[in-house]
Length: 445
Image (cartoon, rainbow, N blue to C red; front, side, top):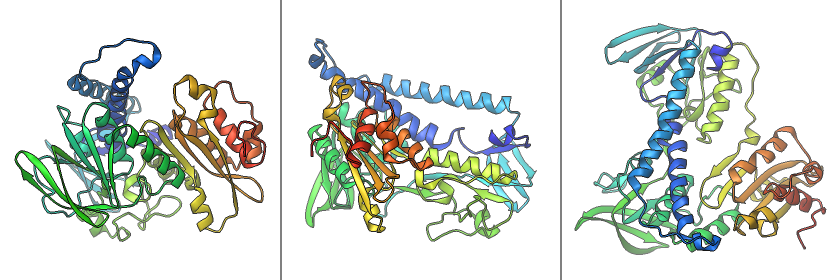
């Protein structure tokens, strides 16, 4: 659509639904189900708000249908925009023939397309580890988890990254007995240690079980259940469950004969190598999103796609990789941008860290939550903000303030003195910035 805005003639080749993983099998449907599950959780605790509510079991089918409606509405919106922008949509599988031609294989035949510029955004699929029994009935990925027609009584999730924790949150809220198995010794291994330790405590209080520093050895069917043989901190054990959800990462969709035969350079993991203009090793061919590896985030792919299009059409657009926010939609949410304290020290950057707890925040207390905090990481010499982490309500909405600060090279004093509306959760960012430079009034050292 950006290319069409800039006056280019655009052909879009799509083998599956418009919107890719994010809209159809990722961000959007999971957030729809998360909302349903959170409402169910709130209803069970309605007495805290002075409301007597008799809540029966959740109607999962209705929740599933609501998720489908949300996805369908957004997909129809995309179709309308494509039509309005006069983009030619070819529904089929594209195969690159040479640096200036490709063939699209469709249900009713095939068509050859000539181009001057090509942008590859082939995405990724859920990855399955090489474990005996991985193909047993009942072992699923995030794709199948979104299509479940009933809530499993018990669910084991392998992987404590964002995907694993969000599904743990969904199914725990609606009555599943959830256990998360993670090979590392912490959840969200790439995130700030203080954040992950606190979130782990909260999720355990919610009733989610965790087996950290643990690995699955084998899965097999037994008496209508799945039996998981595993090691838990070097101790052999067995868990029985109705379903096993594999959330151990994603594999790129770049290992296709056309990309290989064309000679487009990739790294050892299959990620297409690009320069700062998003151009591949072949002139005129660009790539963006999951296809180039790195952080597999929809909003980063969006930015990379914009850059690829604009550079293909003669602009000089760059992606600001130092300010890429990431979010985990548990309750409370986790959001981060830039680098955390441990990473800064690893890089040898002298830093100061500021913190503000939500238990001191008036808006958080009105929302009946005391959990979580905001952290900001600033350079010690000039107080420029280089990182921020949030554990708390609406963290995914709050992180944009810190993302903007990092993008513009803002100093902590600017946010500490900036007038924030009261009462709001965002005041915790103001306080954390103040704490980093000795200006906070709600944090007692």
